[in-house]
Every structure is written in structure tokens, then in C-alpha cells.
Length: 512
Ligand SMILES: Cc1cc2nc3c(=O)[nH]c(=O)nc-3n(C[C@H](O)[C@H](O)[C@H](O)COP(=O)(O)OP(=O)(O)OC[C@H]3O[C@@H](n4cnc5c(N)ncnc54)[C@H](O)[C@@H]3O)c2cc1C
Image (cartoon, rainbow, N blue to C red; front, side):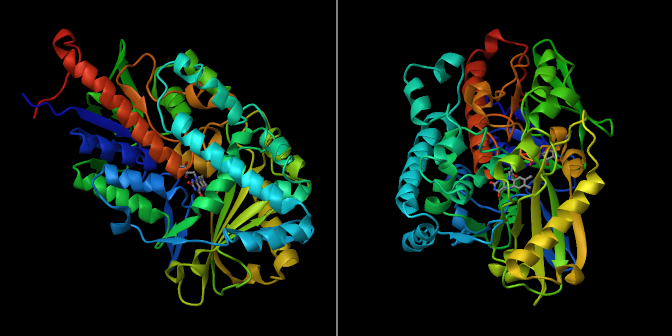
């Protein structure tokens, strides 16, 4: 007899889409319920007046992980995405006027670094070598696998690796072993912000980020990051996945140790054999599942930062602005303390500008520009008085002043045709991100690996999770790994369940 188990996915973020597609490829009948009117979640797109903005991710990293996803779905990445390498990766602007272009061109890096600090180039080579070691070990031994119990994670064979990965050292103090100049220390740690982490709190393991960018490359899919979402969604549909949009799940209904159904806000009920939560994990525990201690514990965990985003349609092009630009505020430590301890906007905010027209002219009407600005800010904290309107105005003003100082651009304000914003409140309301934390739960030592909320609920045995706040963590390629790991776990546990099915009549598998 042939069984076709059914699976229901809550959320069509990249984690939900990739898990749905993998399950469908493995014979499941899959339905995805998405709150909003299109897939992608944080990796979304705004189309306005001929301008195309990616709303969240702009750095396409670890292409080999994307490649593996497409292959697992029976497709080839190159048939779907035209990737272009962006090199130099960023133009980094320091508060005192210094500019560095991070690039994979070793000779160019040498001449730039030695102008700042005589011994910096040898420090750079050692640092990137360490990043390579961290990347390889992390991917193979920690990030790219499931941990089914604490003994696997803290096994005798893993313990030496925790030290090799410098998981107990802080990233900023570790980088100080390679560079003396404060600006270089900043240039090789600010990338922690992608994980929504302060380098003063992040494990030194994350030197793997700088390695990834410079050695494996920062890429851009022509047509924008959202092409990745469109491709994966169309592949999932081809495999039979049914996407239902504008359908927020209101409640997850449970009975003893199982989820039996979900109910949407319009009163519809959906049952399935398995359920996969892709919406932010702490939100699912807090808002969709029955009240539990677990939800309270999650509330006390550390969360990543949030962001204020400006999407500007501009009627002229400023050639001074590169594809990726980073502007670092003056007091590096104080700015992270402000974001991560006070949950505020630093006195001198750092920010990032994405200008895709440099690579992809179709992102704006001819002769015009599409400008995305990301300003990291503390997440929503109800115990503090956060005046978002005032913070947003100050953030906007900082951007204008800084690009005037660093780039001589004095008239941007007059050339902005329209402004669209995303704020911590938008992240929370639109995507149900707990505390508006743009990157989900934080990734300090106590919140990674087996210590991160696991990808299966401990009580409800047929409820799994995929996405940024479960194992292994945030970032598009890492969430693609999450989709692989969750699927592997489901298949492993399903096989066991199917083989025990005769003894386990409470588990219903629908027949085709
Ligand atoms: C500003 C910003 C910049 C970033 N930059 C990068 C970058 O350059 N490179 C990179 O790799 N990563 C980057 N990231 C991180 C990356 O975007 C995320 O890690 C990834 O998109 C998370 O995907 P996900 O599937 O876990 O969650 P989400 O994208 O949050 O998807 C979850 C989905 O669930 C839906 N949902 C929520 N509640 C419900 C409900 N009740 N019922 C039904 N559906 C629901 C949401 O609408 C959403 O579609 C960035 C993120 C942000 C915010």
C-alpha cells in the first residue's frame, strides 16, 4: 500500500519554501499557509514607480549551499539564477575619513592595509586562514548537522573543536591579535551585524564570515535577491506544493503529545500528519501554541538587533556610492553597547547602503537610482521608552550628514522621489518577528548548536521548526541548511514511525 503523508508549513519564508519543496520531493503532500500576499518573508521585494528594492538580504553568500538545495530538488542553480560576483565587496568608510575597499585582490588588500598599519597584511593573511579553518569545521561539525541529544553536542570528539573554533573567546578580542589599529579591528568584525550580533559578544568563531565574503565571494543574482525566492517557490510548486497566501495561522491545536490542526484567522482549519513552523520560533511558542514555560524561557533569551530601513527612489545616480557601502560610526564599542544593551540608536550610528543599479541597471528607470539604507538599532523593548519617530528622523539625518561628509553628496534629499520605510515595528507586525529582532534569536555560545531551540518540539512530536531562530541560525544559506536538517530529521523519524505504524495507530498517514 502506498502512503502519501501530509505536511503543513506555517510561513513561506525561505526556510518554509525550501522545507516544503524538500518534503514534496520526498513524497509528501505539502501545503504552505502564509500570512502575507506573497512568499519570501524577510527576503522580499518592493516594486514602486519603476524601482526594484530587495527589502532584507542583499548579500548572496555561500553559493555552494544554494547549489546543494537546487540539486536536492532535482534542479540546477545556473538554470534559475545568474550570479555575478561583487568585488570589491564593500567600500568601508571610517569616521575620520579613511576608506578601505575590501576585496579578494590580495595585492590591493596589501597596499591598502599597509598604509594603515605596517604589519596588518600578515595579520590579515593569518586572520583569513583562521576564518577558513572556522568555516570548514563549523559547517561540517556544527552547522551542517542535527544534534539529537546533548551528549552528541558536547561529545568528547566535539570538545576539542569548541576550542579550535575559539567558541569561548569574543570576536573583538580575538581580532586584536591580528590588528592593532582600531579601524582595522572594526573593518574585520562589523560583519557580525549580519547575525545581528555585537563583536564584543559574538564568539571568535565568526571570523568565518570575513573568510566567506573574501574567499568564497559576495554574489548578486541578476534581477535581485528575490529571484532566489521566486525560483525556489516555482520549483516547490512544480513538485506539487500548494501555497495559500493571506492566511495567517491564529492557533495551533494540540492533543496530548501531538498537533492535530491549525486554524487561520478566517476560521479555516487545516489538519495534517506533520506540521512545520517557519514563522519566527519564539512567536510560535508565545502566540500560536498553548501557554507554556518554554515560551517564557524564550522571552528571556538574547535577541538580535533590529533595523531601520529606508528605500529611496532617486531621480539621479551618484557614482560615488558603490554597490555595497558601509559607514562606521565613531565610537565602535559604544555603538554596539547602545544597540545591544540599551536597545537604542547609537549617538553616532553606523549604517549600510545598497545600490544595486551599479550591477543591475534594471533595478531603476534609466538614469535613476534605487537606494536601500540599513541602520542597525536595538530591538523593541517594552521596558524602555523608545520614541521610534524621533529615532527614525535622527537615523535619516545621520545618513544625509555622513554621505555629505564622506562623499561630498549635498543634494540627495532633493532628489528622493519617494521613501518607503521598514522599522522594528514593521518587522514585528508584518512578519511576526518577536521583539522586531530582524535576524531572530541571537547566536551567542548559549544559543547555538544543541543549545539553540531545537527543530522539533519536545512535547508535540509531529511539530517541527525551520528558519532563522532554530538550528543552525540566521542568514539565507544558513536557513537553507536549516531546511535540509529539518527535512532530514523528519525523514529519519517518519521512517521509524512508518515502520512502527502497526503498533502506533494514533499516527494517521493519509493514503493516496
Ligand atoms: C534587513 C535584513 C538584512 C539581511 N541581510 C541578509 C543578507 O545580506 N544575507 C543573508 O544571507 N541574510 C540576510 N538577512 C537574514 C535573512 O533575511 C533571514 O535569515 C531569512 O530570510 C530568514 O528566513 P526564515 O524563513 O527563517 O524567516 P522569514 O523570512 O521571517 O519567514 C517566515 C514567514 O512566516 C510568515 N508568518 C509569520 N507568522 C505567520 C502566521 N501566523 N501564519 C502564517 N505565516 C506566518 C511570515 O510572513 C514570513 O513570510 C537579512 C535580514 C534582514 C531583516
